[in-house]
Amino acid sequence: MSALHTHLDQRGVFTMTLNRPDVHNAFDDSLIAELNSAIETSRANPNVRLLVLRAEGKSFSAGADLGWMKRMAACTREENLADAQELERMMHSLYAFPKPTLVVVQGAAFGGAVGLVSCCDIAIASDKASFALSEAKLGLAPAVISPFVIAAIGPRQASRYFLTAERFSAVRAQEMELVHEVVAPEELDQAAENMIETLLNNGPVALMACKALIRQVVPATDDELRDYTTTLIASLRTSQEGQEGLAAFFEKRSPAWQHRKA
Image (cartoon, rainbow, N blue to C red):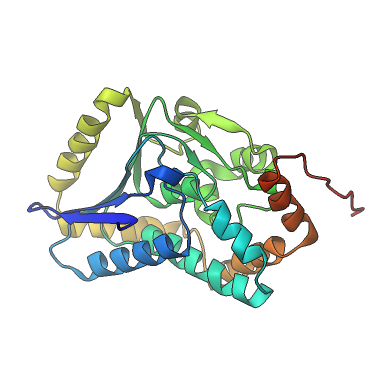
């Protein structure tokens, strides 16, 4: 079974649906590769007018698959860097997609999933959805997704939620502009369809120009920043603290953090 379902309808709406509900749609290297391929294919297809990102099951996405992270923690720093670069390529490809992008969040979106939400132009969430940038609990940082998340919510909100790793509601996500609209679960599909119709009623060339304009005026990232964020997460994954955080999680115990003087 594919971890990603894709569908292009007659209107030009290309839908990508995360399909790992048994693991809360957590993404690993295989799903990242599928997303990269789907985004690249749809980008090259002139019949695509907009991209929609959704998920099957109760959760939108738990973020990075912890089994994958545990496996990568045993790899070299160079292997982790290459892996982080693929994750960054996925996020950047979604962010830089030339047509409008809409994300529909029906449940929990944690860690890297907040990055996926931030990379999309428009976000609609169920009022049952919840969010967290939980990396610090594992001795890590939301490095690769940080440019996109900070562009969405601003550095002040990022300071709180990067540092506390606390969970927040869909209403709170709307207050800090991570999502644009919050609706009841039974209204989510119709709200998404209404937004799709609104976008399709606008000039397709104008929509692309609007996106390019925003990215030109306020770019979220550049080559230097991409190098910094991917290098940072590769270093943290293989660090003593990162390894302890992951080990504590899998062993269901509190991590034994070591205090380090600045």
